[in-house]
Image (cartoon, rainbow, N blue to C red; front, side, top):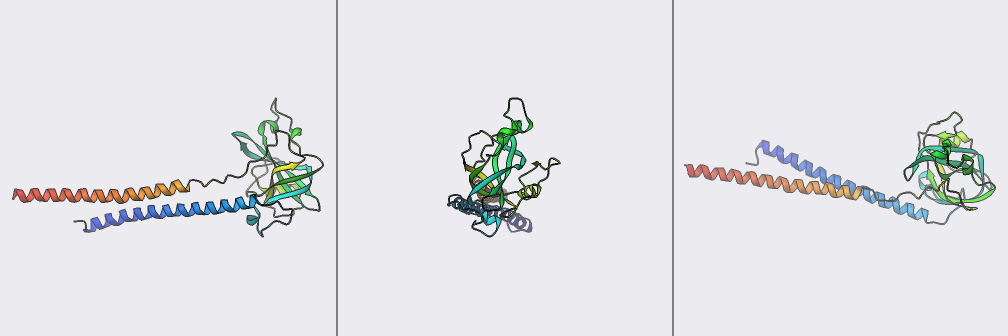
Length: 253
């Protein structure tokens, strides 16, 4: 009875769903493995000895991102942009990007950290904006190279505020003599003289979690198992019902 055209179509539909669930599960496993491999590479770069510019391993921005860098030079406090739409533990604010002039020549953008919106707009009781200026004089900075995002825009006529961390736009706005690709900037995590003020607050290291891929894979495989067992039970129940009706018909004869 289960090999009529109608039932064959039902079998094919159920089988296609189960196969799709299994494929989706294995796809999530592949995504998990890719994430784990990427995290391993990032950790290796972060834990390596810092290098000076331009001696950064890698030929592309993708290969140079997350490399640890240590530089000597001075901040150009007259050339800085604030990156809007940032937050820190639920507090809205900005990132402070300042041009860093490297000893020996060349420049790079340094993300000095998070500044609360209250400071930037001058809310009563907040520390003055002048208090977050970069350290004057010679400094040594250390941090990770990061890649900016494309598609940023200027939020002010003078370009002092950008809508997102677009390093290329910031470099163009500030007229920089770049030593690396324009998409790269340095995310500060330490400097000498040491940072003492509350703001700018150093950006925490990037999140290296594995994401939801493991749980998604489990869900897809669970759906496939439920579908396989459930469809089998439905067929068994229908078969038993047909047999029972057939037995009744024979007794009636």
